[in-house]
Image 1 (cartoon, one colour):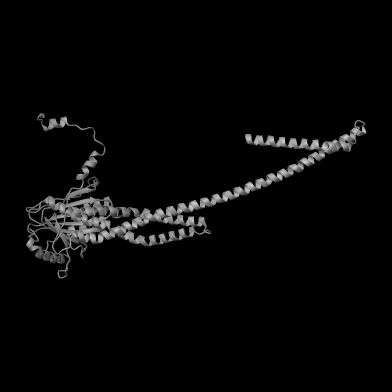
Image 2: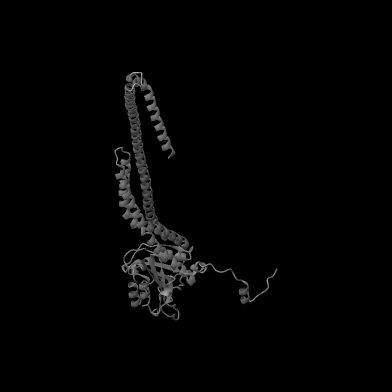
Length: 468
């Protein structure tokens, strides 16, 4: 079946989805939130990433951005998406305009200043690059915050003839030495062919006297602005995320003495728990204090460990995206980064696991100690109950003895009453027998009567208590 041809306007009238979810636009547009820069070679990128702090709020960053040429009208609304691209100068013949990209992240803000270079600049890796406007230098130095990463990225043309590999590496070493201000000092470079051989990426991973690292990218003339932008972004993000991931290492080293002490304290406490003379309440207090200190350390440092894991995952992703191929005789950037970053991250992961396991072990030890205290308390309760039961039995026996004596005493008084009554009857001439004889004969009947009345009273009291 052929669909009838319609105009775009008619098609828009025909196609109407249900009402949008509240987050549809936010989620959909996230892929466009931080566009990759477009870089026309040759170019230079001055990149600075600063950590957030008391002196780097969004308002302070805005005030600093407003000092750039043509940005006095910038507002907080323009920075609401945490990304902004600003054109600082107009394009001239044969040269693109200067552009600044600002991005604010959870822990840091990064500034990437794209400086186009004149055509043919630095051909053959000329170690005398064009200078930078003093205003730009002062502006970069005045960025609010503490520097996390500062990178001077150069992207130059080179046709990358395979037969010129050794000569190109030698020129690159001299270029790095000259850029650092030590032209006679040997430089060890790390690099690889990027994009399966499309371009080269080189760096010595050293912070120069001016506080900047330097990365050199060599690419052929046909490299598009989009591809150059992707390469630059991946290299800059790789170095930034590497440094952010490694921020967990000082935390792990700082926490190591505390973990050693806490683990030894736990061993001591658990060892004392096996002793019969151990004081459970004292051990429980020590466990509670130890648990509190461990939970405090977890609250203070768990977020750093989680962030390091997340940043390291981004590092590996960016290394995969570079698709490196080795340069003969040169250690690749991936190998160099992994050689130290992977053990460091293993140390961070081990410290995080030790902290978590320590918390679990303290919890188990506390549970065991509480169980022991509960069992001890239950045994004491059983002993007390046994003593109470034994006392009640003795009291019952004593009461039975007293009741026997009471029966005898009551019977004695009743027989005495019978004797007095018999004497009175004898004196009146009503009784033919001796009063003593009557009293003696009444003793069995009196005893039986008193005993029967006592048992009946006990039975009535037991019935009343049982009924309640």
